[in-house]
Image 1 (spheres, rainbow, N blue to C red):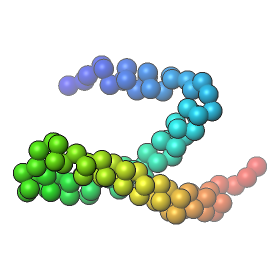
Image 2 (cartoon, helix red, strand yellow):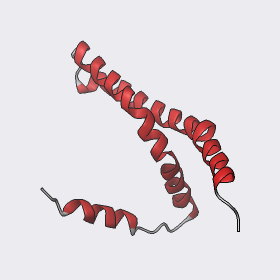
Image 3 (cartoon, rainbow, N blue to C red):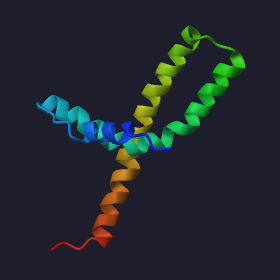
Image 4 (cartoon, rainbow, N blue to C red):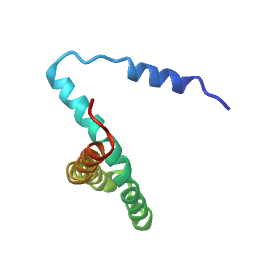
Length: 100
């Protein structure tokens, strides 16, 4: 079933404008780590959910772990970006894209 809300959300997100350098830097950082974050977060989410379920934790008890998971995944995604993603993209661009 098609839901017309999702294309509208994508349109709203894509048509947004940044107004200052600080916002530009935040948006660029979030855009840069989006794919590495997508790659690294999934196994950690499974581990987190298993921990919460096995220990029968409440939201209050598990919140510090959730916060550490978010911060840790962002940090790991940044490391993957700088040590793997950007160097590989640079190498592939040099190897396969011809300059005019």
